[in-house]
Amino acid sequence: MTDRTYDKEKTAEKAGKSEEKSITAVKKAQLRASMRKKLASFRESDLYDEYSQKAALLFLSSDLYKKAPMVLAFVSLKREIDTHFLIERMMQDKKKIAVPETGDTSMTFRLLSYDLPIKAQLQCGNYGIEEPIGELVEIEPDKLPEGSVILVPGLAFSKEGARLGKGKGYYDRYISLIPDKTILAGYAFNFQLSEEIPCEDHDKKVCCIITEEKIIACSG
Image (cartoon, rainbow, N blue to C red; front, top):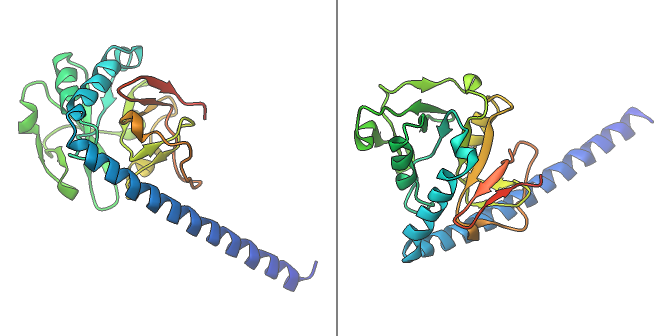
């Protein structure tokens, strides 16, 4: 093979990969738009609070929760499955709970304290999300206790564990830093399950998905 032929093949390969990424990006954008509409509509439904509490109670009654030395939860936005009830209940259980704080490109988790009301420990952060105050203890991702559970938000999930996030990449970057035996659990409504999620190599999969109906062990 000549150098010129090799260069042509490499150029064609790069073009093919670039086109594939472009198609994946379009599919992700379409699915994000569709799911955001569904979530916005469901937020106004009488079932929103009921289904959010059902998912919380299902998780709280599971061995997944009972055996976890620590839970890394997210503080929900209005157009996500609600986690405020869940966090309150975990605090009552004296479970170690941490919630995320975002920077420009990175994210960390801070441990909530049992000595203060939850509202006193949160402040408005990036994107209008409630985030922990800076005085709370920061959790080092590479030192998470074995068996810790991270409740991962997402716009959509597949039964294989693929996840469609909001496109910022915070969780993908954070997950790359954690120990292997940390349990990644998608946390969403059952209607957010999708047959297929367009994925790229850097996209991280979850081990299971918690919805208001059941906890699904992912086949991927």
